[in-house]
Image (tube, rainbow, N blue to C red; front, top):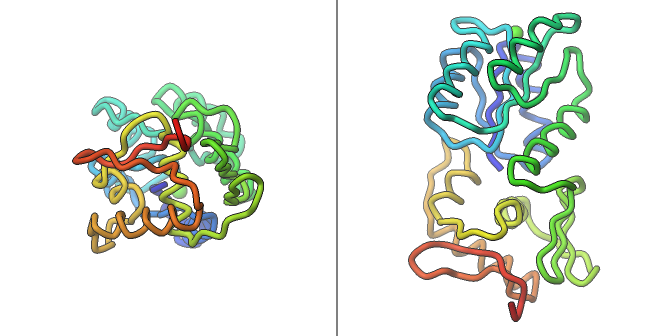
Length: 221
Ligand code: CA
């Protein structure tokens, strides 16, 4: 899952980015409204954390413009405490949730998980395909109840496929959602990771759809 953090306070931006990276997300960051607006308008993020008070372009204007341009990714607003008008304006502009400053990072992470799974129509943090279970809260994967150790890269790939179970996901989409903007992207590496995940799981739930990409399917299904 690839996220964008738009926050002008450098310490807060760094804290958020570190916590999100530790939680297994790929994170791009912006420090003002214009830069954040441009990234959110052109890159495919799974969710965005957007501060309201930003230099150059305020968060409400950024969000309104994204929604006008048809950008539908979930957006979590950061608001100043006691600014109820910010929250109302933010929701009206198209925000999905908010956290008031100062906040606990755990709350931001929990709200993000909820936004990410709701954006794909999933009600809880556990994803299941045949004997494979993935818990997006603990980042744990098991097969028939036995834990499987995946690297963070492998986990991110499987998590993305689990979130989009039921449709074909192209290699390009995977590359766009598993690497940040500075990464040297090569879609061949996706095949290598899929191969490793298949070996580690020991059950083949990742089907290759020739010429199109990958799709999850329970074994024998
Ligand atoms: Ca700010």
